[in-house]
Image (cartoon, rainbow, N blue to C red; front, side):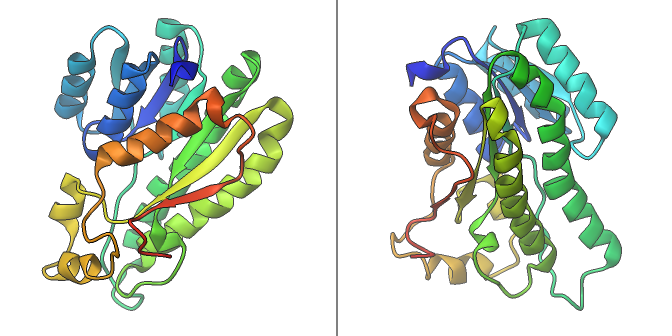
Length: 245
């Protein structure tokens, strides 16, 4: 995807898993990348592994001032912003009755409010360079209900709505906003956060017969970040091995 050469991306939640794969894939295709996360050691290691075209900042996506700092640092180091990957997110496995208000609000603040603040923060820098691409990493949990994932699922439905409304609002500035809906992806969060037996049940419902790879999602991120997808906005693309087919 030579269409991202010389472009600049911000990737949130880029210290490991899907976020790290997104950052590496974009950099390999010629983009410069600002990686943000609250996991400092892992984030710095990912940036160091990429090299000169990558930097790391500690960043809580639910912090509005933090977003302004990330944008200012990205512009200071790389001079422009063309791509935002709203990848940072948390998952919680609780039923509606078992989820506390604090748990629900924490998941919503990170997964939805964080993406919303990111969209606001990059608007003017993208407008200044004639457009850009925002990619919201949602989930197939935003397509149908699932037992025991109420906070996570509702937050990902919220990201779908945010994607569609922002795509309408930002089209006049040639800023595209799309959502990727991954299924079960082989990442540390998938293995560390799932309750016992949960993965086995979910895997049984995947027609392709395996989990997806973070690099496979990253290739879709690269496509949506590139000029090859310049007429695509407001879209939702599932990458789930047929789980929602």
